[in-house]
Length: 557
Ligand SMILES: CC(=O)N[C@@H]1[C@@H](O)[C@H](O)[C@@H](COP(=O)(O)O)O[C@@H]1O
Image 1: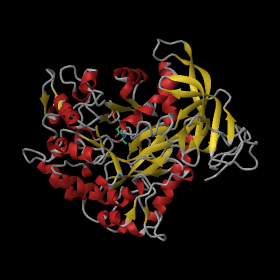
Image 2: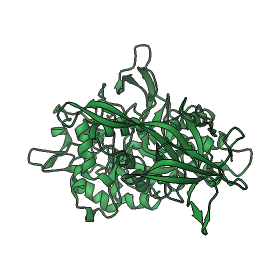
Image 3: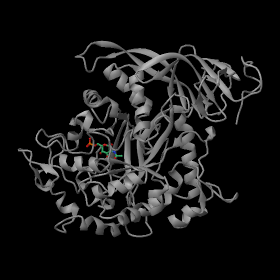
């Protein structure tokens, strides 16, 4: 583990080095407050530590003056499809894939995101089987010394063979950059009437655990690789399968759905606790059939286990006042997510994307991403899966009482007439612009995820609402950690938590008062100055060094 080098100022403590750093003169973001306090961290254990043990004051190897800057737990993104040119659904070879994931991790951490859920839009079973072994809380390493996570041979074996051949170890290595907390599989058990830009041909319904195993591979449902699954609760028997998912440590999130309120409530009763990008890719709130939104109307005492919801505050997906409204529905469940695609950090232009069984194109114009027709030079090609994705038609079809294809008829209770009665999507499906919605046809021009970083979303929230910095930070630190069952481990500055930290400089800007009826207002914005992973400083913003070392080497001193 790296220790302070000779170029560091002399430690203020004495004795042998124990890998302890004292961050002093900082303001710690804890709950809703910024608390002036020292923070002690241990680079050997990678944890935040108590300033004293057995009544003996801990002697730090080094003390760093934070000059009144803000110390936050590292940010957590629960929905990240890719960034910096790489999408998690792009698989060529295992070696290349592992390298691409590593590169993404080392870049992502510079944005303040120290852990995240790599997210896969609806894909073919073959793709899940190939990529899931590489995306879990990795790196997984094998028992044999010459068979590391970068060894590609594992991946060509069946998932069960793969699982039994490895010894799961999580490297707490700061050099790995941002850390996967497990995969978020957003699909393919989603409504064809709220598919957004997901490929209709791979959507399906699950009627048994076997259907889930067929899609993801049985080992990935039980070995921690999958941490979250987004499902439409009205499809097939997925609601009955939620308890099994939960007992395997998987968070069930509801989204891309036409569900009614009773269907949503039944799913929560079965153990679902999250909503995927609230407002986007779901039927809008109807005052006589509130659908998924009805869950947020339940009194707090009925939400004993808590209900959480992701919100994309990129300035494209939702109007600022809708973000503010979403926050006020249940602040303790509000989680900012990016839903970012590989176009984050890229120039404007058209980029390929593996969408289910096809190669498609996304165009970036400014911060907006849209799915577009392929450029004339490119042909929309099949990704040549080794077995046909139509094999999934059987669970999908058997989900329908009439045996009618979902793509033809839609969810029978999925839409609501003027009296709030559920009715066929075919007769009443309308999009939010009031236009008749067609669940079957690809809508060129549809929003295709975001190109925002999580910090940009935090800064938007600060700018639009004027809420306090620590409050905004809980939506990307302690709240997602709690939702993932990692309270006190991630997203926390309490002793015992992983010392994943971001040091922020706070700047004040004057912006248009979007929610207050015009005029100009002063708002706080955050800039990443430093990032620490497992107690080791891995990034320092250019020109912002304080003379002490940046051990990880991802950023300038
Ligand atoms: C990666 C992904 O699937 N992202 C969804 C997208 O599918 C959907 O089209 C969009 C807008 O949804 P809306 O038109 O319902 O607001 O939201 C998200 O970007």
